[in-house]
Image 1 (tube, rainbow, N blue to C red):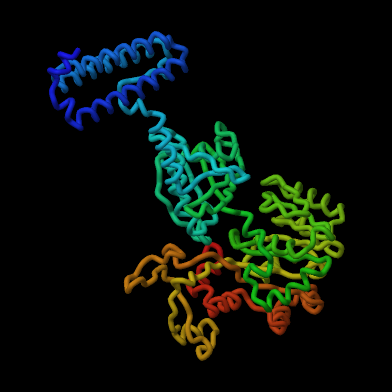
Image 2 (cartoon, rainbow, N blue to C red):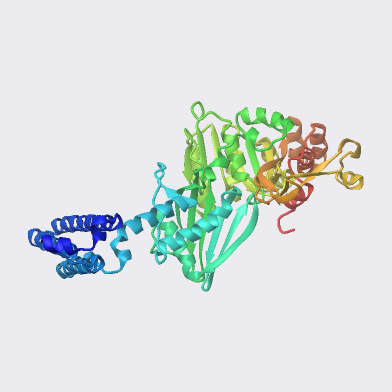
Length: 546
């Protein structure tokens, strides 16, 4: 022993590097043996035997390393002995365990769990969209290049990261035989989104239906559900109301974004001009008669109807609704669902049953049949009705109402007011551009040139350090959010007499004396105030099909 030590390289005794390397190898081997001991205990393998083999091999390897005169030759021999016993254990272990539990000699597999955990954590931090439970508990974002759920989530994130920051009202996906076409409706305007393969589109539909707890296997039946999510760094909460239906040609998916927010608004916050609300408020607070809301689809009928019933106290008045789809559950209000596509006879029968309950307020979301109109007119002395009817303006609706009721006097006596809303986009206040309007254009719009110094138009751009950049508020859209413009016809006793006599021209003159504003006039007031633009008014007020 003394002879071998005396013949060893002086460097092993004098060098700082070599003792450090010796210690590193010894420490690493000790950690490996400790890990193998835990593995032996976990799988109930012959722990004592393999610990004895590992320790014996370690003693032999380090003894030979010290005894061999060449330091690096001894190191190589030690590594062969130590590595050989470890490889032998892996082969023994793999022969005893199932394939899923076996180790491989791929270095990545040694840290598979750590790699997977790191990748999972990175995916959670990187995700712009994360779905949650109704209570707000965040669910894990699926990961994996070949994981269908992860692929679907990535596509959903692509759609929603365009739609949500821009305040979209809905996102639609139509999956055809070859491809899937997506679009987002932002402030009433439809924007096309990137197409995707048919297979990917179906994956998106199935993924979202699974989150909404719908039947993934049935792609034909109409299904409705809800999903909740957090978006962006600020983790803004959103509700998506999901509707799917399929046919032999395609499958459609629609996502309504935060549908409750708009219908929960107060009537005075919808965009009514002060003089319009002042005229309408006493009508809303009075008892009996009918208030009809009329507009083309997508222009705020439901929101206006809910704004009206929100003016009533559900704890002192009995308030009932009749709707195909309940947009918003109002506390204290009895919501009655009508089967979608129900025939007029069924709708009238259900409405008759509700009137027999003697409610104070009854809201009919969609009035489209003569029988229901007559039923409302017959009961309007005792019940305040709010009814939604498709139409363009108050006067055209008045004619429709008279025809449906079939009796001019009864139609007049049962009617309190007609509200015709339109939704217009609001100019982004961060990037709107002022301009001096042409006097001829102002005269064409019946605006006094001497009183209108400037108007505004959409831009979508801002100047930063003398450089034009996309507006950070509207993300280049030029508009941000929507407001309502209204035509409000309030019928007093004199107006009802004119309606009963069929004198609609005289009615128009009477209402003008009462300072009623036509829809275009109310819209132009929003233009003068800088709320919206002339081009937007032209778009929103264009008649359906024009």
